[in-house]
Length: 133
Image (tube, rainbow, N blue to C red; front, side, top):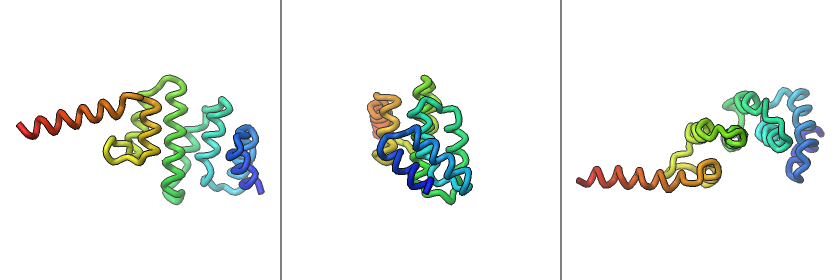
């Protein structure tokens, strides 16, 4: 019941309720499968202190897409505090390389660093030009 309430609250933008219900779900069940939603709810309500802990608690048994979502939330929380370098590092380690990343990951990176793709294209062009001479 707590899980359903938390997910519904998150999807409807009631982040305070989502954080409360998903935290209770996590505590009672011991499961980490909605940590990405809990982390985003904490960020939305101005309480980002536990986001890193929530992200790191998500093991390999959690769906890869949910783990990626959690990393995006963690990076966004860091960017909120002005730490765009660490935010970008997290996203790059998550697979955010310019020509291989998923659209969602590229969107997250360019939100943090708007000129990221331009710079990556320039570097790729330099690399290509250097290899042709």
